[in-house]
Amino acid sequence: MFTGIVTGLGTVREVTPIGGGADMRLVIATPPGWADTQAIPRGASIACSGCCLTAVDLGPDWFAVTASAETLARTTLGTWRAGTRVNLERPLRVGDELGGHIVSGHVDGVGAVVSATPEHGSTRWRFRVPGPLARFIAPKGSVAVDGVSLTVNEVEGAEFGVNIIPHTAAVTTFGLLKPGDAVNIEIDTLARYVARLQESA
Image 1 (spheres, rainbow, N blue to C red):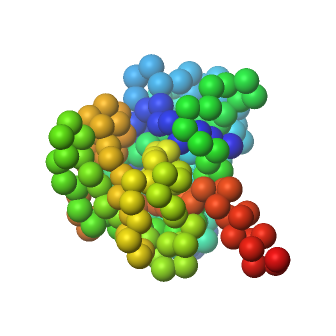
Image 2 (spheres, rainbow, N blue to C red; image 1 turned 135 degrees about the horizontal axis):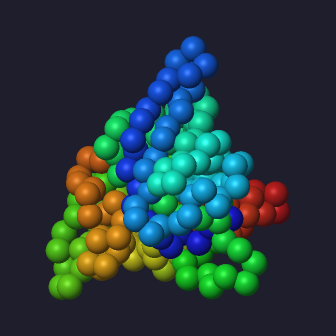
């Protein structure tokens, strides 16, 4: 489990097709001081722009993951290339501060940036999500966009808006996003279960 509080910006160093080209091995370089990657056990989970991935190899300033065809088809990972920037977060430990919200790292769908408009000291971002996910997003609720925990300001149909302060833009990939870009969306786990209970009531 994660919190959606990004702790570092990584960079895709290598992308290698495997499994007959259906799957992919990615080597991700970590930023200076992010973590002692050699102390991270092989098999540990790392959230990469919202996707919970397993570290299969680790070096002094990098780790490697394997993404299956299913993951590539349902997230933005299929478009990652050498140089792609990636939001990084290590798993939550029992007793850690829960600064964002409970994030599983299981991406529900791929959304798109609609617009980014300066608003006072921050920027109002609008996103469009696949139709089936829209009902899970509510004003003042939580949503993870590329692994970043955000509070929803408003919802209009399949679009929602959030405010991003300069600090968040500086330490996440929000500083690089632009209208039309694809993003990984994870809905709030609580919203998922409430909807399921309503269906079975």
